[in-house]
Image (cartoon, rainbow, N blue to C red):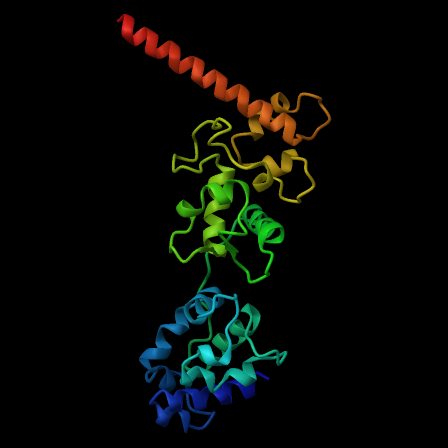
Length: 263
């Protein structure tokens, strides 16, 4: 399949005004081909599958169809579409990009930023619970709880959807107890500003475990929140803790204000 896809990409190169490369024999030295990488292809050689899909996915369904690609890539679509479903997923795009790099003497894919597995689990949880149309994104209508309340802040590209990158940033904010933009080392916020219970409940079982709260401000106070000492935190315990912290904060602020007036 790789050889067939590479041949298709030779045709793609020809369509991209590099007919000399497209017509070249498969035995052409890679370093020679690398010198003649079309500008339109050069940028793609640096892309990850996610970046490729984000660039060409015009209807924002999380896949790339043939009519969404420029001609020099559409020529290779059928070979890249391994399961023949008329669209390219991340795995198929990865194959297309690797064949393209091989053709132009750049066989190594760019190293992607290592994703925090806990954040990825949380993103998958968001999508499993809210992405009702299964397009790989969460729309304003689909968003719930803290995602809904913070939608405009989290929708950084203002397209009306939260994609995986935006959901990752949301997960990082929520796990840090930081929806409004404060630093990750701040103490747990009161209920009004605190993270959504569901956002922390990675396996969506209605309980928070120590493992799920690892890396959040709530990990250090797990036993304080778990008032019934059953080793898990339910929504009632979580909300009670947030209300308590909110009351403590309000009391401290009032005391500070009173002291300020007296001084």
